[in-house]
Length: 459
Image (cartoon, rainbow, N blue to C red; front, side, top):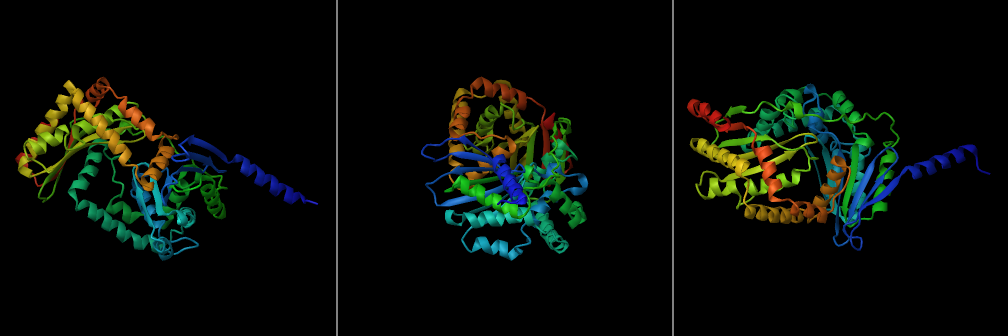
């Protein structure tokens, strides 16, 4: 005879199983490239891509929280938390976490961006259960002790110092501030010395509890894997930690940073005793959901994405004014940036800026030639495929796609979207984006007269 409590338990278990929903998002040939998603009770999503021909697997957990979700007083908390999740759980010490993956030749790391954080491990396919157990344990069972916060503070301050010692890296943080000002998108992901020194274990634990709810997480795995097995192992790990039964989830607020964009024509100079002047000249770009992003990708490739690009040819090949010169795009949920970077000798900075501004204006008004566009389409298509040749890249693609778009696009679909870009679409997006008045960020040892002339580049 079955007891009433046993019946209730069975009913609860049955209901939980019924809530778990599995969908095939992309169907590959002979199982290769098949992408599936299972949504577990509590809202945790698990997406996988099968690649039976390899002997490795990459497992990652993506959190829908980045530095733009911080208040001014919490600057750097997301990145600080990323470090702390490696410091120990109820089951494992920091040494246990690192030793577990080292013992099987695995790789484990994490990264923090403006809008998301990712923790991942790459292992042999036979060691995937270990990777799942360790990474899930870190995400659900972190202790965040005060002594660990104090010890890691010095590490993060050194990381900030290391970034500030690299002007080629630091100038991009300066450009974000030039464009967005003192807003979440304009502040550095690492935080500042003052904000990092002010963070306490209690404040970081509250931040952790608020943002690491299952509804804010996406689990992704790619390689020689079985979807049902991954789901079962992830579910077991989260259920043991009680992480699927939380009812206090705080919905992720909509992100709106478009109004934070600064007035065009802004110039920021950070005077440093460097051998080169590092410059970023740019303007507002496109949000990651904008359909014009495909045309912008082709435009960016043709303008500054390779050795045959306009900027590389004009600045480096023809005139020898810089070793590194390129263009790039940064896209967020609601806005974006388009920038041109160059590093050159300080006495040549105005020549470099004049050429870059001239090319931006010319492409904005005249567009690109059909030959440049055809070449850029081919280059972008090839680099897209070549960039997905390992399980880590595949995990990044499906995890980020699920977190940021809530959907998946096959490689063939991406290639089709790139190939479908027309010269008219490229010219239209060039006029819209490059036709705006730019702003400028510079790091270098520029003297007074040199500094005064910087405004010429944005006038």
